[in-house]
Length: 165
View (tube, one colour):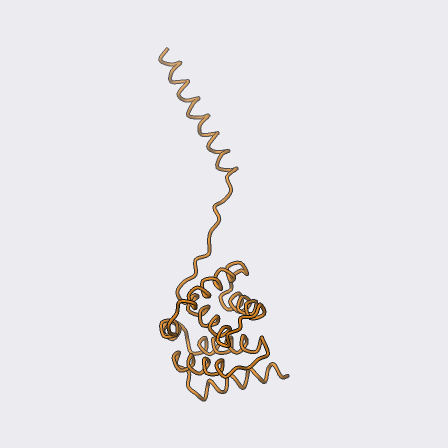
């Protein structure tokens, strides 16, 4: 009887092992949700502010921001859309630019900070409507992220030359 009980226990353990083995194979892998980091949120928020500063937020600007975020951060379109959504919420509640620009200035090289200004210009030209508020925003962001006036003007000039060619 003792041997019979041990045999039943071993069979039960083996059966549970086999069931769990198949059970795990059939389960789908858990979906990993994109969680943006503070720098991604800061850049997204600045880009959203750029698009909305003229009180018009066009679908073309929205798509441009998604494309820019995909390219800059090497993330998927879905993750970029999620980041845009976070940026929209942040921008809606933002009272100033400093919390975002100070992080950008601290975390990014000068070359990457210049890239942020270029991205802002790409958004500005998307709706083909140059607004004085947009130019002023680029100026303020440039000052806050430590880009000199001469460099800011050169970035604008270089960018406008590329779209006119």
